Amino acid sequence: MAFHRIFVIDFAGLGLGEAPDANRFQSVGADTLGHVAVSWMGKLNLPTLQRLGLGNIRVDHQLVGIAPVDHPVGFFGRLHVQAQGNRRATGLREMWDYAGVNSTQTVFTTLPLAGYAVTLAGPFQSYLQTQSAAQRHQVGSNQDAFRILFEQLNQKASGLTYVMLPDFRFAGEQQDSQAFGEALVAADKYLAQFQHDLEANDLLLVTATHADDPASDTTPTREYLPLLAYSPSRPSVHALGIRRTLADVGATVLENFGLASHTAGHSFLNEITQ
Image (spheres, rainbow, N blue to C red):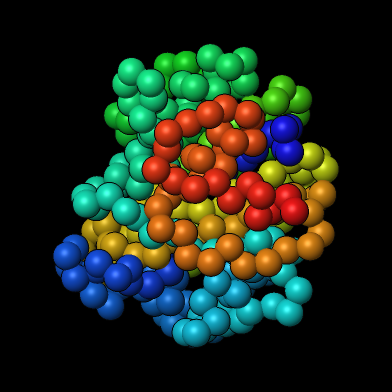
């Protein structure tokens, strides 16, 4: 086991520009973070995410006010949703579902059966509500979600904590770039403290399971999604490239805890531990 605990923070709604199949989902030109950054006229201050490598993900089309850093502290890359649909739960299902021996399994049910703790928090969609093997918390704001995260830092049991931040979806639906940016700035500050409090054998994954560009009439939008990985024990980092499916995240979690799977994803565990 490379990491004792894995924390996944889902910035649900945060996209990084139109995906190759954006035309199939009325999302040509969608660019959630790019449009929010432009609307803030370069004053979107996200130092924690920037240090983790957020600006390094898209060096070919740099984000206004979120420049690449010379020495990011996190591994960085992009995720592409492989599924044919584009509902809000599509990416979440793709990240965690996999083909078991006799039926479709989820990471959220497999880990508890193997003796690992699983905690879920978010604005409960029906998918999360069905994960009865996990400890579940319903949250209505990013502040509530981070409260759960900080509580989990005090729990020493080995396992997975997944938290969905709800404020970005709300801002995207309301086409409110100002509120989206405010939620990002606040989350960045919480993230700084959370990152500081991590233990050496913890792994933090910052990602998103869908995009909601407030500048678009389409919701959700089909975009590339961020992937940032950080552990205090991994001082040397590099790019993770473009991942073809969100299932790579689930595959990485399963491999870390020594659980075989038939997931469609490819684990990047070796890429962040070598």
